[in-house]
Image (tube, rainbow, N blue to C red):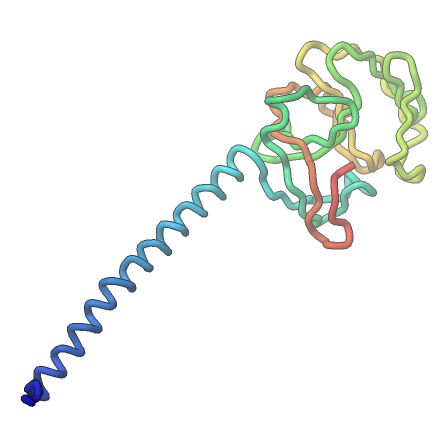
Length: 198
């Protein structure tokens, strides 16, 4: 029985190189293209989420203590107010009216049409004393008063939870809705405080 001729050594080596090249073309390049595609999709989705839905933000300062403290990381929901109105008690993030390059975070105390006044540190909304269980008594300035105002359309009265060290509507007045760009929704750092912003 005749045996198949063995190809020369050089030809065997060429065949092995060709097979390796074919394998790279078959498996390597498509894998790289797939990886690049997946990375691009991930980046696009991340950019969409950050620009239109949720934005990670670091809290600077202590004006929202004890609810939020300095250096905490939170997610800001930038889409929610397209679906629902701004409500009493919401913690909102907005461009500072006196310097729009800065962002502030405060709690909504009054909404359009509300009558707001402060007597010796006690906030009154539409003639009723506002119950604020999120405050530390030591953080309230019991000597401060604020003459009654009526909030015009598209304007909100915002205050920090640490009343003694907050620059808010008591200083810069009612906040126009156009400055508000999101709602503080979730603390993600530090881990021991992870949870919904209250």
